[in-house]
Length: 229
Length: 72
Image 1 (spheres, one colour):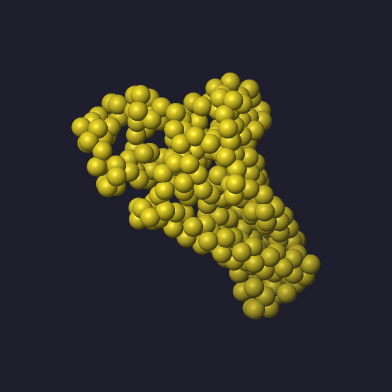
Image 2 (cartoon, rainbow over the protein chains, first blue to last red; image 1 turned 90 degrees about the vertical axis):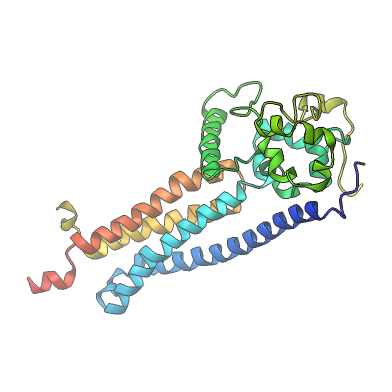
């Protein structure tokens, strides 16, 4: 299904970027867990025997165990959580996102997210983030704030029937990877409307060109792809 | 300063307990990839660990040490 992209260097770069980030992320998680356990042990020693701080060495230990290490653990925890929140399974773990996750397995190359996910045009473990991240300086921070609001609505409010992206889907999400890519710029239609695409005047996904997106309402009647099949 | 009424070992125990509890919550949140685990870490873990660090740092300034009591 779909076209073979395994030899496309730009797609390989995208895949490798995701793999490297995930590998370094799991190494960092392992290191952080070891550091947290060490801090817990040291803090427990101080909890049980605070009198050891009467000696100079005990005071130094208390400073490391109750100030330096917890601060490092906090910073590390924030980084690891930010990395985890970029994973596909994180996004699709919410009930309201489950169908969007299923739509990545639609066995039809005309469905844009499915085609990108199944052919590894985006790292499969970071599929949602690759196309929906706000690629600006404070983008991740804004995403997290919106995410917190969504958690509030999910558990303490009333989730709406339809989920809409704030501000709509911006072409920048596509152009972030495709702009400058040979097969994208070799297409005369893309080049003819490039200014309109860059200014968001014409949308990639709703101008009749690539309009088959998640369409999760059609899931029941569509054939699904299963990896390894 | 009210914190001066506490002894150093009491304050260290409170700070240690808060930090241990916060770190245990951080460990749990790291093992569970879900938006709620991020919320658990951001609101409860960070609060407990941050409070523990602040109490410890405040103790360095305000709390009477046992040695100081002996001198007095």
